[in-house]
Every structure is written in structure tokens, then in C-alpha cells.
Image (cartoon, rainbow, N blue to C red; front, side, top):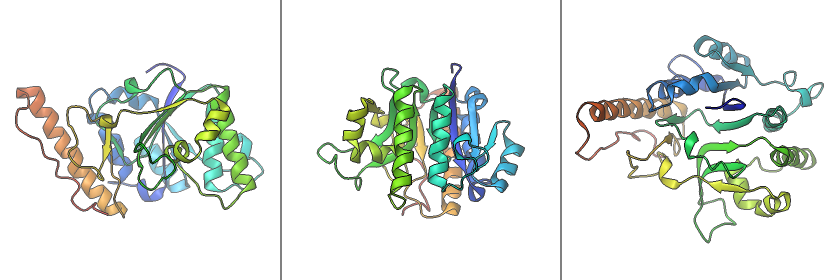
Length: 264
């Protein structure tokens, strides 16, 4: 992974404690195919002090997101969505391109080579043709890439202005934004693309292809305890699968045990 590119995830105290989602997230990097070296490029952004303290005990690159830690936010009291958006502004203005991943996304293979280098934004977002005006049926893969340039920085500044002017506006994911705000992307001449659908998945989907899957998210899950339970099953199955491949190849059908509790 080249310089000036960073992987970012964000966690609060509920997801950052011994045996938590953060531990499983890091374990996926250690046991994924070609993912262990990426830990050197991973920045964990803590959303509260308890998450920050735990992060420092398990990973060398941690950042506490607060009003005092963001240059644009100093001397202001900003909501969490605005703080996150200001963080993206600073990252892009510093010249860093970044991959954002939710912490409940397990990295089974390295997805970064699959990013479209010709487009400033790549999103793991399953959008059904003919349904481009609705966010009800999209599947957000919890993963996106943003290349640092003038236009992407301008886009995040627009999002900041919208949150300030319309404080009650919905806090949409980047996946949702590409669906409902396409005219803005056209106006900014900001090109984006969707990641190939067979490269990512989640508990909402069935029949995941083990030969192509790169990231897998614990979506369709109502509570943290269920996520942790099923992600443990997932990582155990993945380790057994990769071990069999390395020793003797894999000829029989593979079945994931997860989701077990996550069926919301």
C-alpha cells in the first residue's frame, strides 16, 4: 500500500473492549489473505475516551475524535456527524487518500487493489437498476475509498454546510448519497463507481462466493452481542477454509455458520 493512503475505521466504547467487535476486526486483518501488512496503515478513530484508551492497548495508531482535536472544529461544539465530516475534510486537505471501513466489516482479502484508480470515489454499494431514487432497497457494504483532491474536499465541505444550514437533515452514508444526490455529484464533476458486487457481502445476503469475497459485514443485526457471536463464527469458518485450501485445496461446497443470531 503506497504512502499518503490510509485505512480508517471509527469505534465507540460499545465496540471497543476485550472480546469486542474491534478485537474481531483486527483479527480479520491478521488472518485475512494479504491483509496483515495493512495494519501498519490502519488508523482507528475513537469516538469517546474509553474507546481511545482501549484502542491504545491493542493497536499503535489511534486518534481521539473530539472538538479540540479537529482544526476546523476548535472553539465549537459540533455534533458527531459534523465532527466526522470535518475529520474527512482535514484528511483530504492533508493530501491523504483514504479507505473507510466500518469496524464490523471483516477483511478476508485485501480489497484495495479492486478500487477503481480512475475514479475519485469507489463505494461498496449495491444499487438496483431502475431504483436510483430510493435508498430503501440498497445494500451498503460499509466500505468506501476517497482519493484526495480538490473536488472530494469540496464535496465534504458541502456536506458540512448542509448540516449547518439544515441541522435536522438526515445523516446519510456515502452509499446513500450516491443514490439520492446524484445531481450534486454531476454539478461538482465528481465521478464515482460502485465496487463489483461479488467482492463484498454481509449477513443480509445469502450464497456468498468464498472464492471472490473480500469483505463481509455484520449487517442485518440488531445488537452488538449478536454481532460479536456471529463474527466469531465467521472468522473461525474462514480460518478453517483457508487452512484446508493451503493443505489440500477445496473441492466440497462450503457453508458459513453465520449468521446464526443476526437475522434482523
